Length: 198
Image (cartoon, rainbow, N blue to C red; front, top):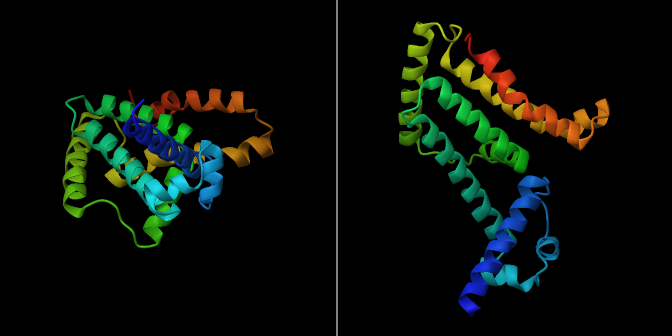
């Protein structure tokens, strides 16, 4: 294996490990030593590849945000019928939420700190298309009449809340990991029945 290949593999390993610690386990304050230990590498390699823990954190955060934006855009700008787009979005969101349950919490905290990650022009284009398709569906009678933002809030709440409160629910209701995974696997069907009339 060449040094360049080994360097790339080590960098990817560090990124993946840090992402798991930050967004999979909610350890936003994990130190470079904790990241290095979890990745099974020397701590100096984190500084070698990323210069600092904060640089590593910011790169991983930006990657995660880009992935989320790409998911939304892929779904919204596809030629699928509206209902299928929502199904696809719920599938992908639940999958990501299961893998990285603390990502959305961190994104919200960054926005609260004044860091908004979506360019206004792109966001405007995204929302205009969504509102237009949403209006068509309301006229067809497949969804209840409501403001589009209420529909978006419903999706976000129904997908994110069970993941965000998982530790609390499992602890207070004595639910095992296996059982909670089963509950989450049934969410899409329940959410779709709540969002659509037929």
